[in-house]
Every structure is written in structure tokens, then in C-alpha cells.
Image 1: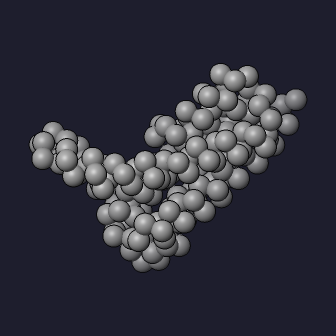
Image 2: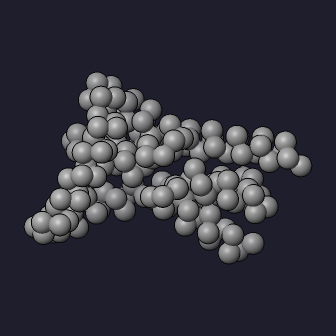
Image 3: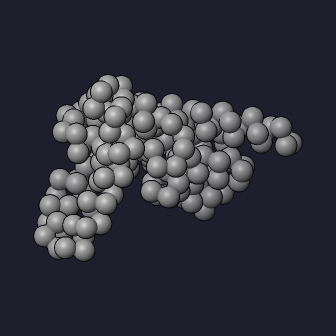
Length: 152
């Protein structure tokens, strides 16, 4: 059980799944439904400060190298195009809505990058990302609980 908890947390901080994969993994491995939600949500929220540090400190250092700069510009353009219209037009609410969509590419990683690229205040960006993550987690959690209940 401990290993399943660790794996669900790792999925929740991973850019390949976030809590959208961590929660179903935890629930399918018989972890308490409330514990699964809380741990995956908190793990996913921890991505924001890590990404903010990366964007403010590490990114500036590595931006000097052409291969990194090319990749960073590609990722930035994708995040900006995905969230751009919503964040530019609606600000906080647009970013929150973008992050709450439980589909690939719209999580806290892209939300943090979008908030950074549009110059949003850190507190507002953090709050928008956290609320969006929470709503996304609720959607995934309820859907998974209903689906698992339907199979048992």
C-alpha cells in the first residue's frame, strides 16, 4: 500500500499525468478515497512553487544555451497558445478555467508557464492554479469513484 501511495504521488507531480492519473491510480489500488484525493491534490499543488523557482532561477541560467533556449521557446509557445486567449482576456479566471480542464496539456505545468509568460502576479497565479487543480481533482475523483463503483 505504501508503494502505491508513493507511485500515486509521483504521478501527481509528473508532467505526464498530474493528479489526472495519480487519483485513478490510487483509487484502483484500493487506497482510501479521501486520502487519495488529499495526497494527489497536495502533490499537484507543490508543482507550482517548483516550477516558479525553475522559471525564475534555473531557466534564466540555462537560457544561454541554444538547444535549451530552442526547447524552452517551443514549450512556452505551446503553453501560451493553449491558455493565451483565456488568460489574456479573463486574467485570473481564464487561467483558473484553463487549469481546471481535466484534459492533457492543461494542468499546473502549463498554467504556471502561462501565468509566468503573461506576467501575472505570483499570488494570483498560485491561487488560480490551486483552485483549478482542486476543481480538476474533484472532477477526476468523482468520475473515478463512480466508474469503480459501477464495476464492483
